[in-house]
Image 1 (cartoon, chains in turn brown, yellow):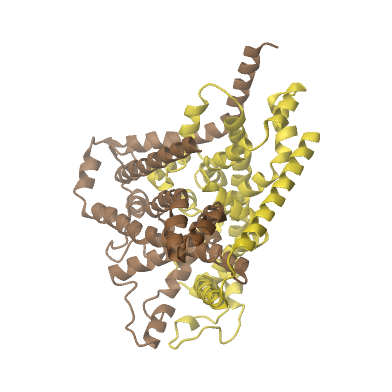
Image 2 (cartoon, chains in turn blue, purple):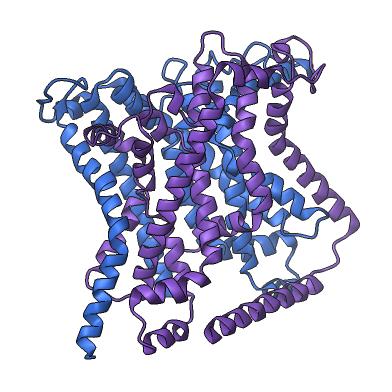
Length: 294
Length: 302
């Protein structure tokens, strides 16, 4: 058999192997993306013929205070969760990578929330943060503090969803950092110790830089996860009180399926898509750079 | 066959090497002071307690008499253990159906995803063909697309295909994912060339090589992919919320929301259902921890 025919048979097999996945991706992701773009230039209530409205949905977005509020809340939520997840994840990874009794048990417990659904966690969080006689407020009162308006005040409502999100995601950060830590050669710490570096200096000069790739990966993953947070907020606050926890994805859902302004909902979706793609691009670049380094 | 054996031996050796490295590492580690260990243990225990508390609270409320959780006064366990909440949710809501729906949808999503991603991952890792890089990048890009960004169009598509409100309307869009392709590609890149080359010299076609040589080596990969996909499907909320309408077809997360949306939501019943919904994943996690952790850790490698 000639070399070329071997090649072409391999090519045929390659396409054959990727086709099932490609069909699914094309039909259920690429088609809806194009469709969403088209919809964003239309006005439709979900029935009847959609009407072409040009950029009207987008100009409405620009003038919509709830959209800007949701965008701002998305940013606030992201800024409030990501640093905690990164720093907390690294601190826990360092802690649970050190000599410790029952280390495996501690690791298991901290990773556990990762397998709990956002809805179930949201439901428990609703109970715990219940404003009148929820456990958190009862404990606050018992130690002599004022109960907090988790449901009636915007700031505390945002804080409660932030806490729930961090609870859900800390384990993931810890696992990735643990994997990163285990790739660091122990000789480095030996050498640093001989040079008289303190524990903190070792952490600053060896650990932090050498888990850099993990940090970058987690930064992207956490930002995207926070940016797309849906179930926790949907269950815990529904975006309220007075839009104070409304984020882009809950607002898109509200327009697309509750108010049924589908074209408007699609336009918000396109904004979400564009911001997400920007982050994906960054990750892709970083992946390529790392491939080159290795 | 011999190749498989060599691979297994290599793997065993690698494992032994890792173990030795671990031993060396712990030998080099300075003897931490007792005080240091004690302080670290206390910190770890406090964090673990905080993390586990919401789950503990879910159990407490699920087994408490109705309304007790909102009575004044601090109480950290039920006054009397009761099963009435469980009886109530089973009695009033189609919980068994919801459980079954979650299971059916999870099984199909997982089966389709694993097969389709395994095939594609193998092709991207081991087969050279024109356009593979472009398609791979395209698939990579889809990983980050949030369902909420295109949900209106997806909903219209699923309605147009006539599968809205059915199992398939939930299953197909959920199975349209490339996440596993990357895990699979990574795994297949790690298989020694000789294994595949030997089969090729013996004249085996690509499909035969894949089925008879490659697949038997994939068990850890299949385990990881199965667990992560099943978990994702089991816990999925946004898409089933859109794609399902009849409450007999709800999955457990949508059922939970349904309970909460009742007028005068019964939080004891909700916690009973929440417990039912999280238990399978918690048990899976406890039994297959290694694979879960491996899967998540691998997702961070590249």
